[in-house]
Length: 543
Image (tube, rainbow, N blue to C red):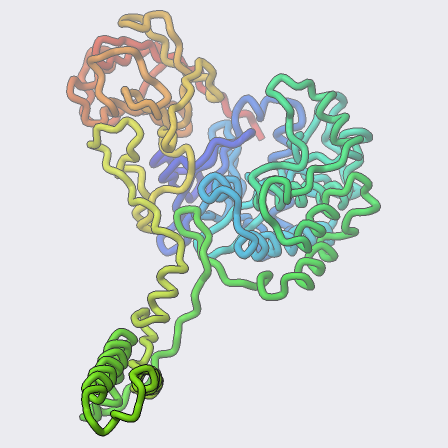
């Protein structure tokens, strides 16, 4: 998709792979901000009601204009594919934040979550129940803003119900007891999901979790509907007042929960007034305090007075210690003089020691201090520097021997930070990618010659071929490079491109020099592996 024109927007990066859509970063006309472009997966678009869900999301976002709801830009239908153009959030989701930071400290979690409550209260006031609140559907940006997204299964109060019999919408671990048992959808079901999300931010756990991978859904549902949620303090130290708030939000009985997001918000504000409006910045998916700029002290004309310059703490300590030592030396000298013959040695040394101590303390207190720098130096600067989180390691280079290094080519030049989305431009971040023979785009590479003969690889919007474990196409072929070739979807078909491999990439035995459009049946060869390209273009339906 990279370089593909969708309406007036040009796709520049793949930034995610959600349940029902691929997500890309795009650019509009010159001078406009970057956007996120969601492309509805073809398999989803073909299912009953799911295209309507996508259109419902577009309609909801058009109507819900709030500073903490992702802004709607455009809806486009092009070449048989549906696209939703939204505000771009450069730090990913709360789910990414949890993966990066682990349990998010209350001083960061509370101000983020407080903003989300404002957004959900606004949507409720306008008749929209979200129904799929979870960390992955709350996006964040570098300015510390948190915004709701993914209104694809929103219930419009009094509107059409798109849920068909036997089809469950939402994410199981965030579903309220009354929804699981009776299918009830209202404000309280959103409050419950918000509570579970907040709980997860603070602990990395959920109040109810599957006891084992193969636990039947019925068994899990019974525990949610009949059991009591695990207090968050079981997993992490947490202020008692915050635990009370959390437990109220996820109460089994909906009557015991907050009546509204506004009431939830009010309780947080009353209990933690200094945190709800705290300014944050989020860099490399790590939250930190947004320090207000200190006003520099007014600097006057130069002066010759040494007292104006002041002394550092270590200098004042040294002077005081030296003075005390001199007094003790004088005491020793006095002990040998006839003048003090009537004094016992104990009296003389006690008096000398007291005088030395008082003199040292007096000098330390009254010697002029060096002014504290307001530009990050001095004691205050050192304390502030120590309080900041440890810096994130810089992005690693592509030519490293380590198979888990992050190539420079997928960093984001616009913000100068390591890319923050876990799957991006055909490369999984810092972990092996599980290869598959399934493709949402119904596009495949079938190995017809080579070590993996007979194997089928499913293609994504951006697929890469190579030995790097994070790539999605990895033939067992020693003749291919770590990053050998890329196949990218351009909105209608796929383009093949060599990535600077040692042995080259061939299409129908012609060596690639630049990009080439692939046709159904073309043979792509990398190393000793020949793979047949299979793709049936999607016909654009009349609309």
